[in-house]
Length: 291
Image (cartoon, rainbow, N blue to C red; front, top):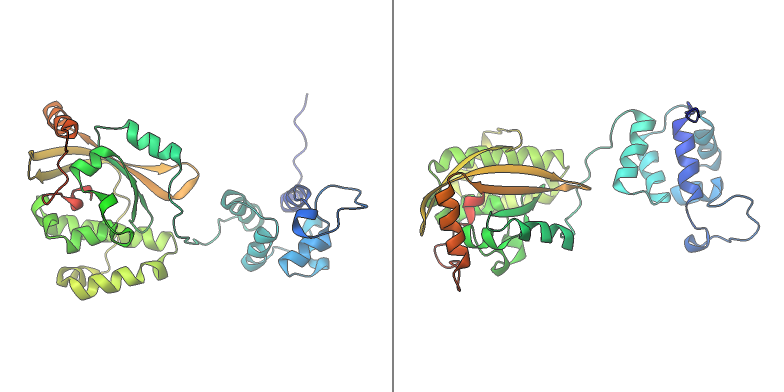
């Protein structure tokens, strides 16, 4: 059996398919006397605030490429997911849409179970603006008790520049801070989050002279990726970790960070500390060792 013919008008085919999947009654349109399922062309145009004639031309492959603004309106009108919206831009304009930052909505129970299964290896999930939104028990013992912090303070950049214990944890604090800030700047810009990070940047500018100097250098760095992280733990002493960053499938706004002990003896000592009835999470916690 031959594969079905792929139409040259991919945009029109995709628009027709998406509108056929919508329920007219659920969107306030009469459901009676419809020969085909889904919304009519003029109903999609009404929801997108565009001309019915222009929308018909789009489905027919006439009139040229639509603007990014029109595509955004159509994505909302057709109730597309982020993945579907990206596909719409790719087939219409040959490029993904501009970055559009949205505040995180937390993580699913499945993601939290994955973090918990990694114990005793410290692991956490951060957003594109480096807010920590989920963690496991090992990271609480090894890094800091994120659950005890106000939500607004669970940011890794704040840790490195405002927590004095961050300096004690790093072998070379200035080098770490410089790289972290450059990676943060690149991540925030890539996510279209410049406005969202402005309050954080303003706060650090006021409170940290080192931040003011480094921010003014305008350096950017690529993703942290894989590497070796050396820290000084106040209870366990020097520790080495292989740190790795992973994209979270279906959540481009999230990154999974895993810190795997390099030496078996480090893993054993960390596991012993985690298994204590009252694990160490107190005054000596090292929030910034996650960086």
